[in-house]
View 1: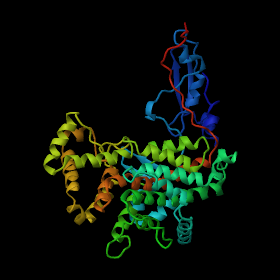
View 2: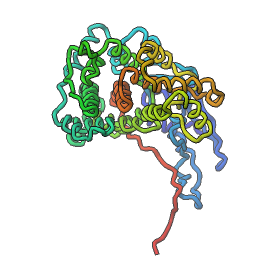
View 3: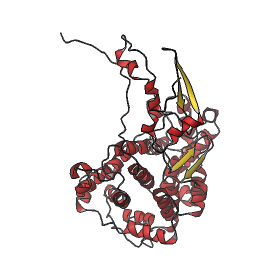
View 4: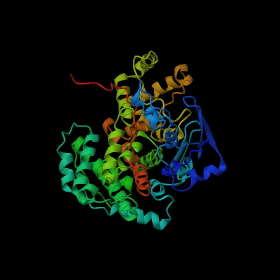
Length: 459
């Protein structure tokens, strides 16, 4: 019975898969088509998919497109049980309700660290010293202001266009303004294992993403874009550039700065999300960081991902009043409508981030009381939390949904909430890109199962 380790060296080069032959932690497979038995190594409770290519059978003449003679394939639509990479950045367990950044519990990070330290932790793998903290803040503040061509592209959009479309356009314009950093244009690989260049691009994307988001928001709202102030923190600068300031002081409200910082810590990364996978899929082809970021932002805007937050918010607005909340829930239970913002691909218990976000809503109690729409949202949540339909299916509100309520309480309109959420994820996305560039070149090229016609002839 063969022990299938031949192909595992293609997957893991650090010796883990190879050493499993000695441990004999393995999966035994009997192929009933041929009677052959195989033993496949198990490491980290995972098996190497390429090992199944050794499990072959004679060609099926009735179904030649199944390519049985080329080896067994794994069919997993939507990556429901497929690991596509290794990472040291973020870990979550949806059944236990835990979330860790670089080994630190999110609860400890939120309680003891600020957003700048969390950025640094995700990107560089450790919490910064005071000196490193200051140096990091300086690096982010030292990026030149937006190139005029980027602002021109953003301003070319209709002011009523979704801000996410402006952001994608702004990123493309930023990419064009530094074409020498596009590998295909430069005709060489610029980033793989090029630590210094990669690190600089991470800073460029983080700093410019904030300016692009703020400029898009200002254009959408018809207000002046404030140029960045290097004396402000990353979050303070974001609010300042957006013109989201206290009417009496002309500066960002410290209470709101604190809330945004905490929100961005909680939502900074969430392991292998759809947008992270989109970023890494693109990155595997070795373009520049901005190309990868555009893929991530585009994926994030989909209504089954980040876009669900905007849909949920607008659906709540359609409910109109607290009196209509029960009727909305009844329509959802009758499968006539969908309740966006409830249920999560990972979590089957309370999202560990939800507690902190609800605390923020308590801190913003006065703002919440002034907003009738938030009263509708909380009434719908109260009904859902006590309803057997939701509890039996373990359908709990997404933490990101409550984050939208925090943004709304701070005065942000519905269609800027999605860009703000993307901003909170940018450091996590860049951490994944940086990690990928420290690996080996392997383009992501999934297979498919062909179910169409075969062997047709043209008359």
